[in-house]
Image (cartoon, rainbow, N blue to C red; front, side):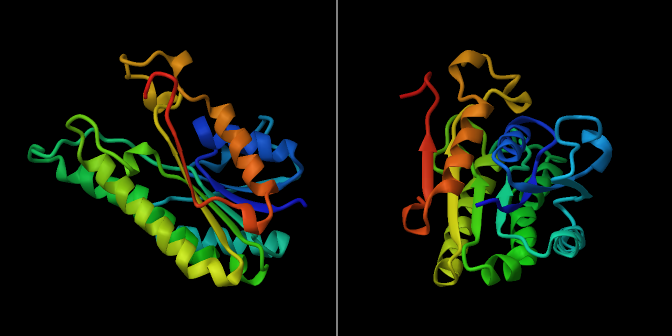
Length: 231
């Protein structure tokens, strides 16, 4: 059954791959973008795709995007959070890096929180709402000296659990997707893992598509994936 999907992070990487796959599957997409014109003239510039301005740091932006999508298409039954940022802020951060911590919290945690809250009435009213959240394996374990990013991702995982608990009786199913290294621009600086050994964005897009095809009784809450380099 075709769905109306609200999707963040579609300008590149994982979000872009998921958007293309779900469009091929026949779904309608509402894409929230810092620059709504960034996808004009691409394969995502078609009738079943709407582009809206969205800033994860602004609650009013989330509300306006949701309202515009409901006005255009009547309802939202699927929400996919792909937008996120990476700062390698260590535990013993230097003066000035507080800004990085604030931005990590604002984008990686509060962004999904505000957008979920705005979309919740529509997700609940349809009786078969779905939420997918690209959390990362950094929401399950911490490696190396990086502190700020995994702290934000652990918090995001907790938010996913809260979404699940709150929405279960309303038919909302939540899946926290936790890949390790993915071959995207965010991982370009990684030298320990070759791009071919990383999880590919297209694989996550296939997974997202499969999750939407499952009945409510079979939707997993958490999917953790190591790339081929890791054990």
